[in-house]
Image (cartoon, rainbow, N blue to C red; front, side, top):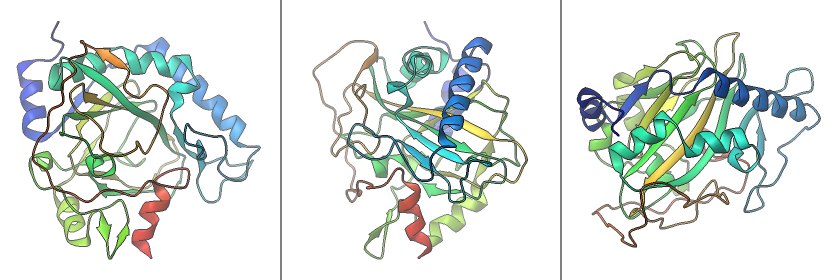
Length: 288
């Protein structure tokens, strides 16, 4: 059954993003936040990235300056492997149904993570396109960003460039280094055209895999935590290892298996698989 209006489908096709109110029931939101708070408490006893992902990299990434008194847990890779609450949200709900309506009907899970900005956190996400981190045979990919906190103009909201999913794929290699971000001239354009995606906790933002986006630092005294789950059409096949590997990658969450592959014409450079806990280390190279 369709969950989106004709206007919502039209907006996504035209602009490459869509805001969904009430994407998470209140009880589900409470469960996700309770689990995240437990992870924050655990992080107090660590001074550097810790835990192991599917490929042996650290699972929990800590912001520079993290300490027991002021924990700054900024990234958790593949939380669906650790929490039944996160796994259930990845597999079901309004946003998953909407994703199937937009790029389905057959949908696979790609990867998930939690991105968090604690009050005053300096971490910013530089403008980039997700597809350049995870090359596939076509671009039928959607990222769902669930708001676990109220997202405001002050606490580092997602900023998207409407319509950029219809434009070029920008280089994410700068001077022979994979920086995971676009060049300065594209950043200037993106900043002039970007709009913020804000809303109350429990909302979600759906974003096309080619959409140019980023976010600024948290300038408020309130946290901004997102559960991010990425999906692909079942006939969209990866061309390089997943940057956030998971035992659940490729799980069919809607529709059926077709044993088909769809290829569309694209040209881009292969990305660079990160060796650290997250892509923040890669984007830091852009400042060197």
